[in-house]
Amino acid sequence: AQSVAQPEDQVNVAEGNPLTVKCTYSVSGNPYLFWYVQYPNRGLQFLLKYITGDNLVKGSYGFEAEFNKSQTSFHLKKPSALVSDSALYFCAVRALNSGYSTLTFGKGTMLLVSP
Amino acid sequence: DSGVTQTPKHLITATGQRVTLRCSPRSGDLSVYWYQQSLDQGLQFLIQYYNGEERAKGNILERFSAQQFPDLHSELNLSSLELGDSALYFCASSLDTGIGANVLTFGAGSRLTVL
Image (cartoon, rainbow over all chains, first blue to last red; front, side, top):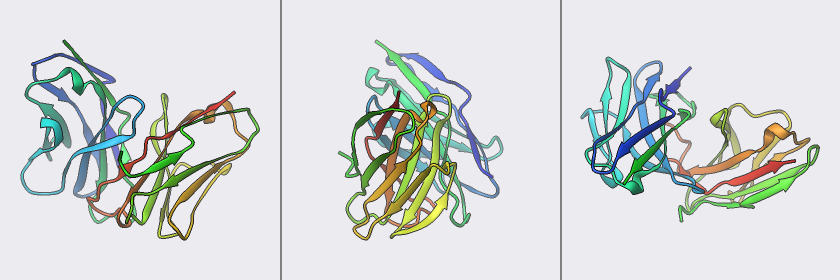
């Protein structure tokens, strides 16, 4: 079985400050890891993914994520937050070579960036 | 616009009724996925179809069913509706079976309210 934990329901940060949204995962073998973002009244949008290789992955809108195998974490980061980054963020995992296993999402973390 | 079209956007119905949600995948995508998003359960995978065939099944209730038609659009049928079925239902699509690191493209969702 595979699972994702996002330990924070909400993260508050001031505009211009760095932000981190935490994600830990559990999977048999090596993982594929994803971050998606959901703006109000919209569907989920893909931000970035980790497959293999460099542990620091860069994605859309200036976001990046750091894969840490020993801590089974894939935290989302951005050096300088914008008010427009306020949204619901989902981490997701799929096991490598898992046949038809599905993409499992965390419960989401609401990011609120204040002006 | 993600290219994944879901109708209706909003639906209000009564307990015991039956509804059908429709999804047209992004052009060229062969897989369709259905997810249910609720405040208490987060984003739950329901079912996946690939080129007309059921590929994977998640936490889908027996009262729910789905199918993918030859033109690749999909319908999710929800019957004997209960108050707890009120949720946002998302359709997503991908080019292939979804194994590995392929990205899912989400529609804007259908919001179902059961009164």
